[in-house]
Length: 177
Figure 1 (cartoon, helix red, strand yellow):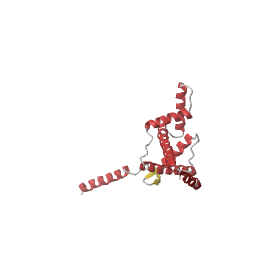
Figure 2 (cartoon, one colour):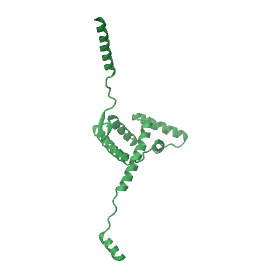
Figure 3 (cartoon, helix red, strand yellow):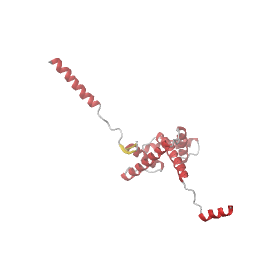
Figure 4 (cartoon, one colour):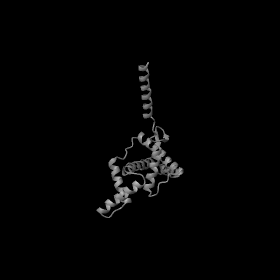
């Protein structure tokens, strides 16, 4: 009987140990589902941080601000889906580096070589203060650039041609005959 109880107790102990080790951990919460894409809480918070950083404001995590950021992310996901369907080209890593350099030059100007290092350090410091990294900004800038480019192209494509006055058209027909 003892030979039967010990292995059974060992199995139960192993089962409890495995159950404890396999407990679920929340990594990130899904805030919104848009089609087959999701928007997480951390994406909403990152959007608030990035927008505040680029506007040189303090991040506001109020419910109204979260709702506004979520609405912008929903619009972005919908536009992203349109871009995927239309095989619209995206900004690449080189574009991201160039946009980051342009952003740094325009937002943190420096007069000389020593000033360039100081302006880069001040930008990194400002990013860190807002809970961001240079990689976050380098990823966001080409994405926003691509979104603006797509929106401009789609606006031009769907812009209506000006209507002609029917009297002008009739006059042109009379003159041509």
